[in-house]
Image (tube, rainbow, N blue to C red):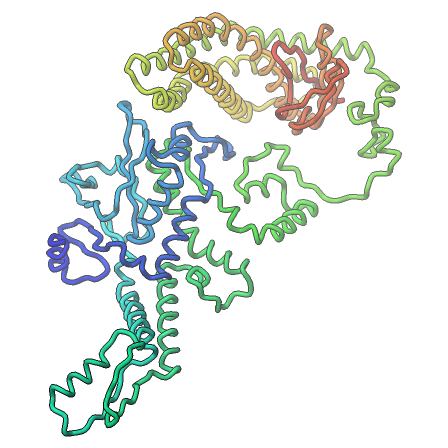
Length: 639
């Protein structure tokens, strides 16, 4: 305490902030929490930080959201091995609210990847700058660079200083404390604050003191025997004065709420200008919590994330009272055609549905029953065999044999052109796999812990992927150039597929390939459990099978994806599935199925006939084949 007193004196008596030689220190204990309003604000806000869902995300080239790298996600789920996420966030929240800032030491792996976070008391942190202008943190005698500290500042007043509510509220809390002391003395004396004692003038000073001492007590329940010549008149505080003490305490609660920027209900005050709880929640979210969460999000993103990754809290749970109004609003917007599904999802911070989500809808007349029975649900007079009842499917006229043969000729030609890249794909996949396995083995040889190794490996996979990315782009561009004349002829179009949008699509496609590859390899390495023998066995198995099998599947996948893109570029609005003559029972059921060019041919959650009398539960959205390993189905333009 001697150190703190000296610094207070040097600071010139600034009550809210102590700045000494460029450093900042907080001079405050936990005594402020003795005030119920202060306690309520700090506790409830800290609980919010500790329980509000948070996650790490990333944005792709089109601005669509997806999961971020594994490192950031793991740290958010388990900040360190001693504390749960709740405990870590609560402790950080307490410091953040009481002292205006919260700090944690970022412990990194030898390669510089964040591994875990150690929270520290704000009062133990001293900040200054070195000769190069870099911020330096001193904690318990150790020095840390600014890159090794997670600093979440609620109310910065300078590079190294923050405003502490615990210090600025001191005078208000002192007043409330004195009011409580007076109330305590008042009730200890049975609402009597003193007595007026009239005694005979003949008494000596010693006798008067004895009588006075008899009435000096900390409570009003003491029996005293006095002479009948002594008159005692209690001195009492009237009820109006007592109510003023209560009002003074309410005033203090309002002051504390104002300093924290929270609504009155946070500190037990029921009066206010709000009509209902929903209005109070909106006020609290907009003016109080949103700025605080933004400070947390920006600090965590800066400390833990790279590239397009970012950390975000899910605020939806705080506005449940307003959900009904939001649903009504969105329904009206969607059904009346002035917002698309993607626009609504963007407002809710949900990923885009792709081009299919950009379609605008408007309510029209209901379809007659006979159209529904016939399968002509859109009134076009055309039959959709997939939607029709089974008896209508059986009676439907099959696609003409000559048309089917012609389509299969186009499919064979498209597949042939895509297969020219199979060997190149296999070779590039082999090279990438070799780099992946070498990276993971390096962590094993270095003795890195399994959990830490997985975190580092997740980051390393992205780096390795970036190294090989350009080679894949060149391969798929070559495939696209060969497919162009085939697809143009198939669509009977005099238009031409433009290079720029095609290049952008290939970039997106390669992003998808990288994501599938990284996820697959990560799971296979995780499966080894860090056992050298299992790793060796898994490595040999991958090298022998993965490049060949994956390159074969990629031939079908890329041919279909590029064909669909070119269909859309050439003005085609619908497409259908064409199966091979030796297809499986499931794919045979798919033959001729029609879908919108921007839609899905199979939707996640659908129950589709498997061709053997059973049902296959569709586990994801399919825009095109392959529908399973070694699938040879393809897309064709039109119905």
